[in-house]
Amino acid sequence: MFASTTRFWPAAVGMAAFTILAILAACPVASVPEQTYSSSVELEARRSSAELVPDGDLTKPSWKHAKWVEFDNDASGKVHYPEAATRVASLWTETHIYFAFSSRYDSLNIYQGEDPKTERWQLWDRDVVEVFLNPQPERVNHYFEFEVAPNNQWIDLEIDKTKDPFNDASWNSGFDHATRIDAEHNIWTAEMRIPLRSMNVKGIHPGAQWRVNLFRAAGKGSDDHRKFLAWSIIPEGKTFHVPTRFGILKLVNSARRAVAKAL
Image (cartoon, rainbow, N blue to C red; front, side, top):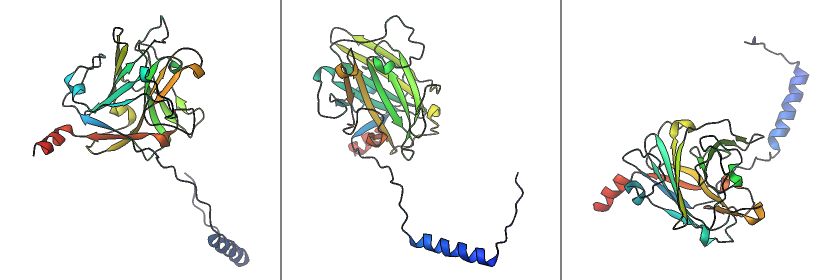
């Protein structure tokens, strides 16, 4: 604890200080530009009446009644890859947020012979689906990243763009995930179940709007030859980490919506 002290300025010094403060007050002060979100694309996450156990099977009734979005464009929004079309849906409960991906592919690029139970740094150098999730939109530069590969390898990161480095791999959400590969139809699927407590979310209220972006990396070779898809486009750069371009994740109570429609 620091002792409190009082300073007494001589009258001349006090008058000079007052004059300087008056001049500064009269001068316009350059304001720090406020970061705002520039995307209005929306994904509706519907409430699930029961918790789901991820196993990669998207034929569950909950997913059949979910609202899906689809994208096949690259991050700039200018190039389309119909052979890599990706569908995504989201659900929520009082304790978890869920995401499901259904991804078309023409070939798979994975790390071979590795243990999928171990977190894999630089997983993004292979085929992955990614969720960048911000449950506190007022903190624009702080969000969480979740990645899963076709062979169920994974990584999760806490992101803070105000720090260097900005990606903290030591953070562990404990999220569950599972994948399946349908070689006959060239589709691989993934389910993610993310504990709310891992993101310091104490509860979800219907009508809440979070910020999210959804990504896909696919293909072999250098980045110039790979496909980098984004749900909410990022025309100003090549990095996925542009949080002001995140879309809206709207959490709704599907049961109430159903009642309203019936009436």
